[in-house]
Image (cartoon, rainbow, N blue to C red; front, side, top):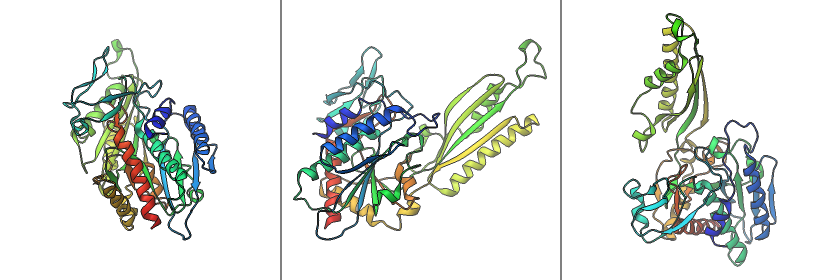
Length: 405
C-alpha cells in the first residue's frame, strides 16, 4: 500500500484528544483507530503486536541478522489537536502549480504562498490539503503511515538485513499525555525516533521546556445599579492579568529560540473567570523566571484587592531533551547521515513545541525527532506534500540499514 493511501485511511478517524477527559485515551476515536492499526499490522505480517487498555500500540520486528546490533524504535502519535475539529475530514489532493489553492469557496478559505511562502518550494508537487473546515491530521497520522509503510517494505523484502525494530504508537500526545503510560521497559529499545516533525528534512533534539498555567479569579457580582465599592468584576480582572503579561513575548511575535507566554483560553463573568496559558522556553533558567513572573502577577493583583481573589496552578509538562541527548549525539548523526544518503537536506533546528520524545528522553529512552513532512499543523490550512511522506519512509529504512551495518 502506498503511504498516501494509508494516510488517507487514517484521517477518516476522528482522533481529537480531549484535555477535560480523565480517561486514557481521552476520546473513543483514538481507540477505534488503534484497533484498526493493530489489524493492519497483523495483516502485513507483524506477528508481535499488542494494544493495551490505555490505547498504546507496541510491535516488534525481530532481528534477521547473524549478529546483534542496537535495537531502534520508531514512535508516532495517533491523536490530533483539539484546537480545530478533526471530525469528518475531507482531504483533497491538488497538484500545486503556483496559484492559490481554494480550500473552501463558500467560506473564501484560500491557501496562498503570500501568507504561507513555504508553499513555493513544492511547485509541481502533489499536496494533500483540507476542505477548509477541519484540520488534516498529518500531525501525526502521517508519521504513523510512514512508519508502517517502512515496516511493510521490510517484511516484503526479507533479504534486507536488519536488527530488532520496535514500534510504538501513542494516544493523547496533543494534550501532553502521550508518554504518561508508555511502557519503556516493554518497548525495550536502545534508542528511538519520533516521526512527528514538520517540513522535509527536520531533525530535532532540542525542544521547549513547557508548563501549563491556570488562573482562577473569584469576583463579587452585585447589581450594577448598586455596585459602587461592592462589585469585584472577575472578567475585568482577567483582562487586567492578560495585559500584565509581556505583550511581545507571544507565539505570533517570536521565533527560533525565543520563548513565550501563550493565552489558550479565557472565559467568565463578574462572579468568576478563568485564564489558561502555556509557558515555553528553551533555556531552563528563563523557563523558571517565566513561572516566577506569573506568580508575581498574581501577587500584585491579590495585593491590590487585599484578598487572595486569584488562584494559580502551574504544572510542568515536559523539558528540553537536549539535556539528555547531547551526551549521545551519535543518535542524531545516524539520522542526519541517513537523510543525506537518500537525498534529503537535514535541517537541524529546535522544536518550538514538544514531542513524546521529549518526555521519553527523560524516561531513559533517548528519542530525537524526525520530519513527518506536514505544514501548518493544528489548523484548517494544514497540508502535506506526498513526496515528503515518501522521503520519510526512505529515511526510516536508511536508518535501519545504517544501524544494521
